[in-house]
Picture 1 (cartoon, rainbow, N blue to C red):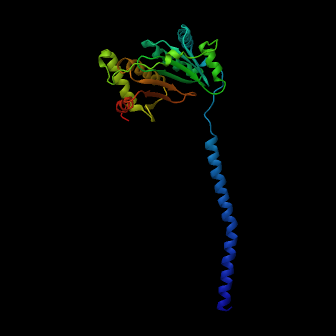
Picture 2 (picture 1 turned 30 degrees about the vertical axis):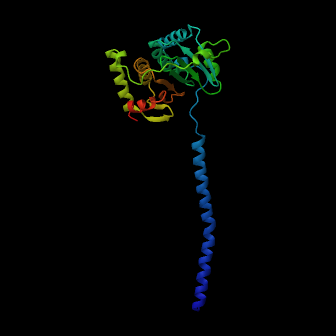
Picture 3 (picture 1 turned 60 degrees about the horizontal axis):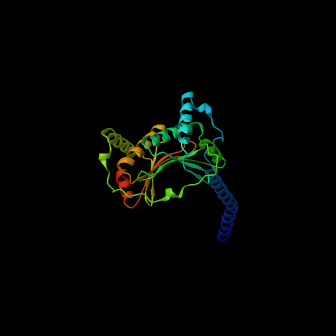
Length: 266
């Protein structure tokens, strides 16, 4: 065969191999895209486990059941203000020192038997009101209404919307006993060491902490103490449903955000 003929045959063979490889490459590409699409779909469609909308009383021992009932009776004892929210209710609690700790205890117990609730416990600055909030997915609002014993249409008194007085942005250590000062130092150190995530807000920060009953109680202790020595803080305990994370949110007027940043070494 002539040299020219060999070159022609080689060119035809190479072209044929190229044409044969095109469908294979296209098939492989399609398979990769389908695999990526499947992976993406599985990630976006994965939802947190949703508990049935029913109280699991077996999650509590007899003493815990009695304690929840006693706490709820105390919360309902006074004709408190009630806020109706899109997905639940919020009731105003008394402002004494023990109420934040008792509300946190209630949250720790209630999330065992009713994990479908989202809990929030905001304490407004300058000795403002303390609110206990129950919210959640569709259907949870009615459970919150029954839990709080709400029987009539509710609203929020406009008188509560008045602006609070403003304390100096200086921690008043003299307002605390030695035991309270020691406890505050301990929990702040604990939060610094165990913080898992930080969220920045225009007027403060949120600190994600381990989701344990002990942490919930320590956050309550922190909130109770700083209402005495740092009344310019707005503090909120947030506990998300289905054994979700625990957050401590601290906000306030101009200047408070920098104090929070330094306090928690953000």
